[in-house]
Amino acid sequence: MSKIVVRFPSDLYLVSHVLVIAFNSLLIVPTVMLNIVSVTAIMKSTRLRSKPCYFLVVIQSVVDLIVGSIGIPLFIFYVVSPIVGFLNCTVSFVTAQTFFIPSAVSIITLSAMTVERYIGVLHPYAYTTKVTKGKIMAYECCGCFLIILLFGVSLPLKRVITYFSTFLILVFFILNAYVYSRIYAVVVKIARSDKAQNRNLRDQNSSKRKTFIDEIKQAKSCFLVLMCFVVCFLPLALTSVVSPSGFDHVLYQIWSMTSIMLNSSLNSVIFFWTKRELRVQALHVLKRNAVTP
Image (cartoon, rainbow, N blue to C red; front, side, top):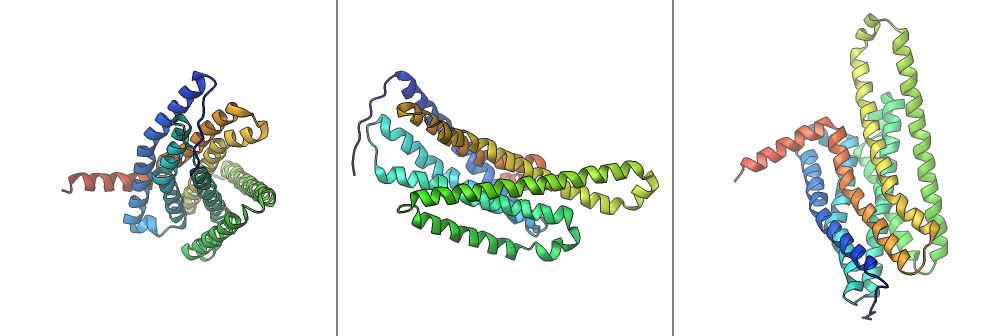
């Protein structure tokens, strides 16, 4: 184990490190608690548990829970290391993987959410046969296998892995841009059609209309989670492009990573905010636990 003594060029860097440590220490509690409540609420409800869209929420919440309980504490130790004059290469490597692996699984899960919403909104009659929890798990397992494969070849083939990761991210953005633009086009088309129809005709199709509105609300929730993911990861992407040197690079990097850590807490906030059923079930679980000795 090698030790590296780091002397900061000014108090600004030391203060920045302390603020990152304090913020992430506070972030652990809401990240862990919100995701535990989210998973528990869905698993306790037969209705929510049976829906593929909520099954995907469980997967994402579990990933975020791992980030909150393992990733953030490791990151805090990583930031503390240069302050106390200790930096271990193994800690740096493991910390880097706590970003790479959960981020990759999140991309896989968000892609699954996108495809699930595409079928749910544009092909509702095929939804029950094409979107099942078994197929979602098969997709997630294949994605995790790909992550393990990438992790295995990342050391000897760093340049190749960078190009391949860039390609996957590009495909991810193209997929989401296509799907949500199609969903938006359908919503606009339906809205215009409603204006052209009389009220009696709309009332006759009230059941189908309610189902369609519910599917659109689910799509809105997934889109907001996707946008939150992009915004939280944008600082790290900009840092890679700008490529500051020396201590400035370290400064930008730790704040960029803090933004990524924040995403694991914001996901649950968005899920609770946009999904009324999840809020009601979560409150029910909290009240039941509060009165249980």
